[in-house]
Image 1 (cartoon, one colour):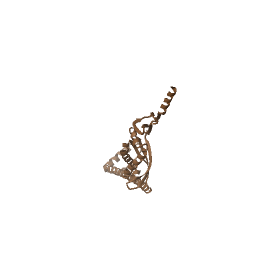
Image 2 (image 1 turned 120 degrees about the horizontal axis):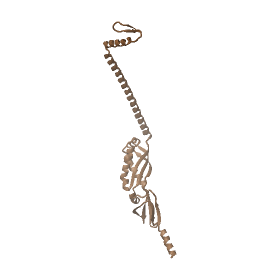
Image 3 (image 1 turned 60 degrees about the vertical axis):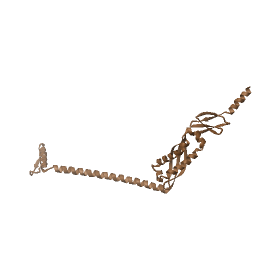
Length: 254
């Protein structure tokens, strides 16, 4: 009897196996070659190793690195390092395994090549090296989404990390940027000179107006009155003074 129980236990153990689904993964059971719809979350999963197996897939954000030559509107080839950030739609993992398989990164790379060729051919090479780069990245991402989202692959972002322009074009762009900087610097200098000239004109006009007002206000009679007032104040001083005058403009001798 004991021997029979041991045989049953050993047979049961041999007929059952355990797979561990780690955090950031999901598992799908494949039974007799058919992918089941049920999605297994993290933790242990029991299955019969003779008839089944557990197919695991990561649902974390992944980074696909590519180095490609991108076409420009004027027909140039621009070399760029590309990062494609993506993750799998958890609910569509069974379909991904059934339709695409686990080699889905090659599909993503092919879709990117097609999408980037369509988008980059609408932009000039200099645009990829300027502030329009983010617009190009967004356009490529949206075009990839049209295909990949239906397959259960979510494209989070497309990043063009390094752009290598043809040597002649790169030099031309640098010269153009330098010329623009020089023009802006000269414009600033001219604006400062104009402001300084305007300031001097305003100061000169103020001085002229002040002198004009002063000259118009100092009539001969006012000058005489002011002189009399001044000498009147001097006469109050205890010091002896001699005032010589012709009746018009007095002169003081101390």
